[in-house]
Image 1 (tube, rainbow, N blue to C red):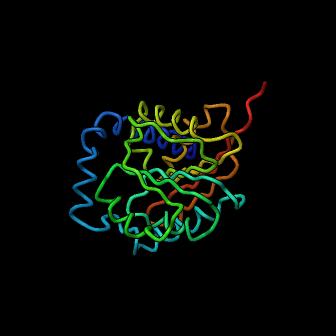
Image 2 (image 1 turned 45 degrees about the horizontal axis):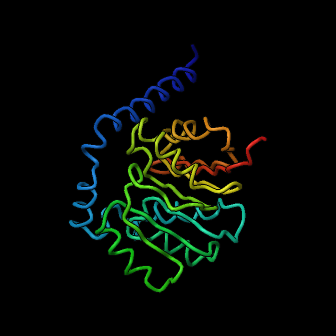
Amino acid sequence: MSKFRWVGYLRGLAETFVLKFYGLLGPRVFSSRYFEFRYRMRRDPWGYEISPYEQRKYQQTLSILPRAGYERALEVGCSIGVFTEKLAESGLVREIVGVDISEAALERARQRLARFEKVRLLRQDIIRDALEGPFDLIFCAEILYYLGTKNLKIVREKLLAALGEGGHLILVNPWPLARAIRAQFLSRPELVLIQEDIEQKTHRPYAITLLEKRLKVR
């Protein structure tokens, strides 16, 4: 086996291990209490407001959208609303629904987004709670790897059901773990890969994946 094939094989094992790890320990370690604690301790625990890394990722995420004029968007894991604000200011979407598991994060997001009449924020657990579709655009950034393989499949089905036909789903995940998550979504025939931008020249590589829900074959 060549060096590059070995590297690919080991990466695949690592990706599988990460999802298995989160499946076993994630629900206990990264519970709603964990995120509530982080947001109560610090206003912006992941530096969404000030990090150049995060700002570049937000810009690239908006840039991957193939068109403007979306009617209704869902942002899963909206946190304190930094990306939500950028999306609202862009004018690309008429109505935005942001959901997060932390009420402390949502309190700050509501303050930030109070001037936008068409932005609605809800406290939801995406594993247990229903999503109020349909949406023609869904963002899911830096959330899915917390779920583990079993819960990832549950959330995948919820997102797919909430996404209208012809709608777009944007996934943002660490690279190369993004490949394993993307494969889970592409196992569904309704979803088609339109574009994937991979940023590797950074301290924490990531991929932004654009999927489209196509009409079912009759």
